[in-house]
Length: 65
Image (cartoon, rainbow, N blue to C red; front, top):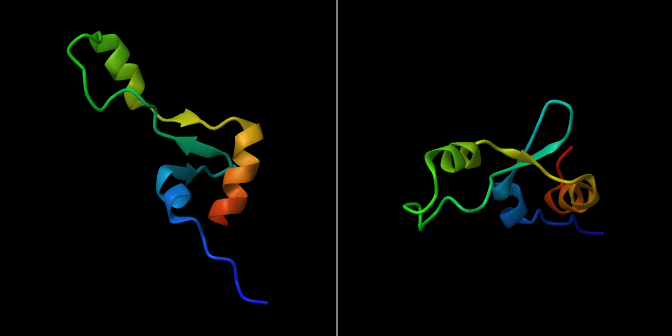
């Protein structure tokens, strides 16, 4: 049986923490930034955790942890 390839798109978008949780970048910081407040943009910089329901699927696709 051949090995299953890693989904590179998933691998690029998520990072694994030391405890095995997945972190993602937040959406909404690419364009149309003039109407967003500085506070909102600052908070969007920080990575966010992936919900456990999705994390299981993404881990399987990315072959991480």
